[in-house]
Image 1 (cartoon, rainbow, N blue to C red):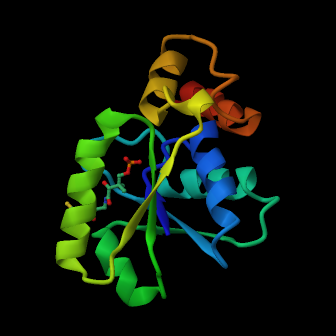
Image 2: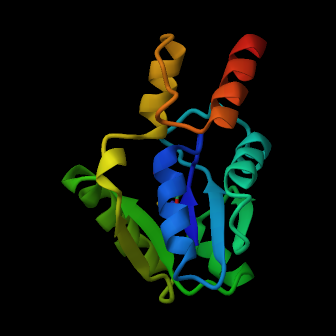
Length: 156
Ligand code: PNS
């Protein structure tokens, strides 16, 4: 399972999904709530964008859940959690999450993948900030995500 808030999915997430899907029979992309972040897209919108941007891969399932990540172990036959690490700065938070999840659910092993260097500076938060200040996000998200962001901005 590859969990995240995916608000929105970026080229960095897609890179991890592409690479992880090669060593998983099935990769569940789980859209979860990050209590630290105020959402831009709804769950439904995020799911739709993930499905669209990963439609060339045939072993991806996209789900959403508004509770604890470890509770998904009861519903799905999950072997491990995959997380992307961009830099040392991600490590402290992700290390804590991995430990907490393991303390809550013995089966919850976390495997870390290094983000490809070309996406090491990328995050959904940075994409939203650049976008909301009128900057160019073409290199950071697929065109369909940029279009959805434009539409959302018009509606707000
Ligand atoms: O993409 P993000 O925002 O870094 O993803 C963080 C996320 C959503 C994976 C994390 O906040 C999470 O697991 N949320 C679900 C609630 C939970 O289980 N929290 C961990 C125990 S405090």
